[in-house]
Image (tube, one colour):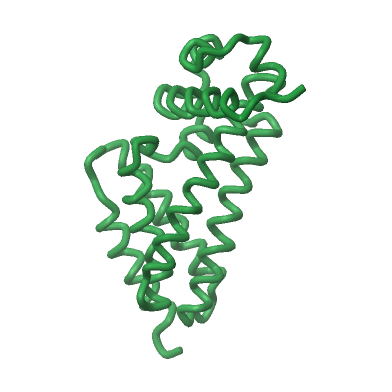
Length: 190
């Protein structure tokens, strides 16, 4: 028997809040259950363990992030702006109540030398989505080598997210400027 939608939401809300601000390893499952107001027996009806709950919270965060990024792409007036809109989306996502001080995916990946398969799949899906979307947007913007540009931009995105640990009030302005130089170099003469 599965969980009610409201119970799943409570668990994922608590998991997101605690795992992605305190850390996965530093947060016992009991803390998540207490915050959610759910018993262990109830949680185990929907999630076989902590790893599955972490993966589900990452998957939900991934879907929420994509919706914010989609809005930024849609609002972009040009293909170049659509490609750079990932930085607008990072700032918009961070401004949301559930936006963490930095990336939940990078934080989770940093906690594991070898993540359990469910978490590894969620981390891989997030990276693959970035590369796929950035490659498509780079192609639409006229990049000579969209795949190479997407990898360069993902590195800038990752660095921008990591810098938020050093300056929690920082925006993506500097990263966007650096990315703009990469985009202009990759599209010049096309």
